[in-house]
Structures are given as structure tokens and as C-alpha cells.
Length: 132
Image (cartoon, rainbow, N blue to C red; front, side):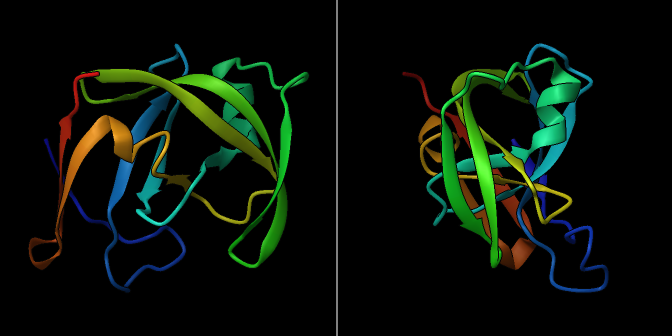
């Protein structure tokens, strides 16, 4: 599948980025735009996404992290993610506070489940699910 690069919500008129819409949990209608970041080591989403998707974070282990110059607390929960027709489970950090209007996809919860090719000259990202 090929995904066109898009502008980040707060950077209209700037350089497009590899943003992917993902479904979170069992609720297909809970979709979040996420930046594919090959240097990230945690997939992080805003905390309100867990609430919308009905994901219980109350007893989840926490991590203190720095994101975009801001400190946040991530509640780590194994969660179902879906892109297109491909679904998988991975540890996701639901963060509060969250400084952005988009999520972040990382090495462990995203890139290891796909063969990813950046076609930056064409402003596209190509994804092929990896069979485990």
C-alpha cells in the first residue's frame, strides 16, 4: 500500500511528512493520524484516544518520557492497531499531556510489522506487512 505524505496539522504550508491514519482498538471508527518516525522507540498516542477506543489504562505501567521538548507520562497498553486490511497487537503509550495533534509510530510497535520504503521524492510511503 502507498500512502501520500501530508502536512502536519499545525504546519500547514510546510514540508509534507509520512503521516498514516491508523485505527486503534476494536473500534474501527477511532482513527488517529500518526507520523512514521524511524528513530522513535515508543509508539505514542494522545491519552484521549484510549478513552475513545474503550481501552482501560488505569492499571497500566507508566513511563516518563520527553516528546518534542515536553515531558509526558505514557501508560503502556498492548493494543490492537489496524492500517488498511492489516491488524496487529503492540505495546502503545497513551500519553497525558500530549503536545501534538498526531501520534508517533516507532520501531517496536510499527516498523517491525512492515517493510517500509520512503519515496520522499514522490512524497509517498510504501508499506508491505511482514508475516511473523
